[in-house]
Amino acid sequence: MNDVKMKIVRLTAENFMRLVAVEICPNSNAVIISSKKNGEGKSSVLDAILAAFGGARCIPPKPIREGAEEGFVEVETEYFTITRKFTQKGSYLTITNKDGCKASSPQALLDKIVGDISFDPMEFMEKKPADQRNLLMEICGISFDDIDEKIREIKTKRTLLNEQKKVQEVKAKEAEQYKDIPDEEVSVSELLEQLQSAVKNNASVHTMKAELAGARDEFEREKEKKEEIESRIEALRKELEKLEESLAESKQKCKAHYEKVLALEDKMDGFVEIDEAAIRAEIQAAEEINRKVQRKREMRGYVEALNKTKQEYANLGAEIDRLETERVNRLKTAKFPLDGLAVDNEQVLYNGIPLQQVNEAKRLEICLAISMALNPKLRVVRINGNSLDSDSLRRVCEMAQANDYQVWIEKLDESGKIGIVIEDGQVVAEGNNKTLFEK
Image (tube, rainbow, N blue to C red):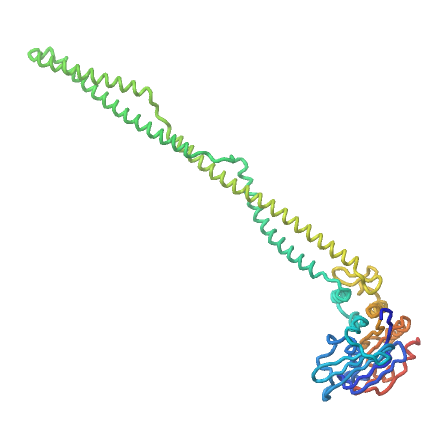
């Protein structure tokens, strides 16, 4: 069946949607189904074709006409007949070839032959650019969902990293004010030992000074007393012996005190007062330096974290670039149903021009050509032609004939003279299509 190229020879439908009973045997490449007003069943004819070939995904929720118990659609092609019956329990498909043999897997057979018969060129033409792009990509099996998801994740990470980077930059800038601070802390414990030694030393010095002052006072008093005794010797000769004894005793004491003074003075020569305030100031300065050293060390961590964050941020940017390149490569290698078709991030392009900027006549040709390309075996295209003017309708018919495709067009026509006219779900007339090919 690889070389199969077929069209519809006969379409029969009963009690399908709005159809009561119709039988249509196309005699041209353009099959126009018209009605004077909406709701007569012309859309149901095209839906019958879709339901027959498309399977479960194309069958409407309520295929049976209101009031009927069951219905069917039968499509005869050059090779076989497709019958889809609808009951209250479901739908049933059979395919019979010209020899009367039934296909064992009828829907699988149709899936090999039928392309995207649900594609309506006019519906595609009227969609917004972004919707056209998405539909064409879906038809061609192109998906960027994985790339878009990865990019979304990366952008989220980059946003978080950017916020983190801003905080780290502030911290890193703050670290600059610690650049002249030494890397190692000053040993406060050594300074404390010096202070303790100085305090102990100075306490001894103060004690000795106090002893020296006391000794000097005693010396002066004894000296005064001695001088007083000596001055009174003349007047107190009678008391000479007593005074001499007293003098001798006083001399001994004086000598002893003097020796003590000398000894203390000799001892004082080895001691000097240490400036405690200077050491305390040095300790305070050391503690301040140490606080700054600790802060510098902390700031160094911020700088390192910032550099790491910047690198990670750059790596994520490179990953986005790689994914965007992958997106471009997928588009380059994608197989579109029509030469010249492509998509960018926003719309469908034809020969590099946005499809919406192509003139309407050419755009109609492109959309119809896409539909034809999607159905290379079943050469049947469905079109909702209510928006087609006479020139556009004529162009569709010409393209169908030129490309040997069968185009089924539903068209609202108040004259009742164009195509196969449907009224109340039945064929009531067959108009003349000849004028469509005449200018």
